[in-house]
Length: 405
Ligand code: ASP
Ligand code: MG
Image (cartoon, rainbow, N blue to C red):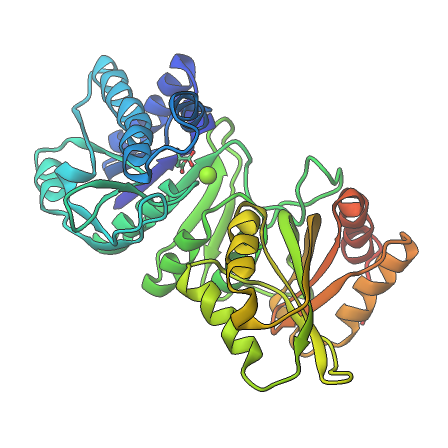
């Protein structure tokens, strides 16, 4: 089989962990498989590099920041090759330039556009274990650009897709995907399997196990993904096309604390207002999430929406600069919001799910600021200080009380 094994930063954080991961890689190789390894930077390296940059210049150029950040992955890959050599097996590390991973130009948030795998093929032909830097691509100017935080998962899946690997294993410090963050909810349960769509929702909604774009890619190219622990041999969670739904309506609960709410008060109640605002946002590549619009009264209305906290300052700036053009009286914003979501493929046909979620929040005495729903998820915006309690109550309602609909 051709297997891609990706190890996250915590799984290669120090020499000991690198040796352990190397052993796992070699065991797979010894079983007769061809192995491609994709690595993140060690531990907090990426954060440390960013801090270092900011020490020198609080607003570093995005190009140079990518140049710097990309060194983290290169370190872990070279070290891993050395660890495998020490075990007596052939291995070679390659960065994005050497492999030929092309990306669209946006520094800091590049998207993989093309993947050349000739070099990987030829190294595999030589029976080498091939170790590839995650998180990087080469843009049209020939510059290194990074894929966004957590992007190594996406590199791994892209390689697995391009090379039609039989399996893509994501090794991390948790042993799978849980019904809720186990650090917050003691009784969270590990899922045996989950569908791409559900995983995509969970990943986009703040469950940090997988980079959401990696799940998108896996779905598009039907890559079989397994999330598992780099420390134990526990089975992990399989992410695949159709999950056996059995009797579960809900597969998990996600919390995104990095959510900010913005409200434009006193907008003209004219057609095209929403278009004006959101096309500005799109042009500036800021994604908007939950949107609500009040009912017009005396020819004015309010529009409220959420963005991720890191985009709050830019968004406010943008809206203020274009105040006259958009036409509103003032802006309100709140960075201390959190988005709590329940996700499950089985809820599409079941109105009881929303009611159960709202009931749990009401039991916890937590008020809801915004609501949004899709086929397989319900999200609510709540105050960040209520977030953990909300997760526990909602988890209890769905997974511990054994709800019947
Ligand atoms: N090292 C990068 C980060 O910390 C990429 C990754 O870990 O996936 O975001
Ligand atoms: Mg990660």
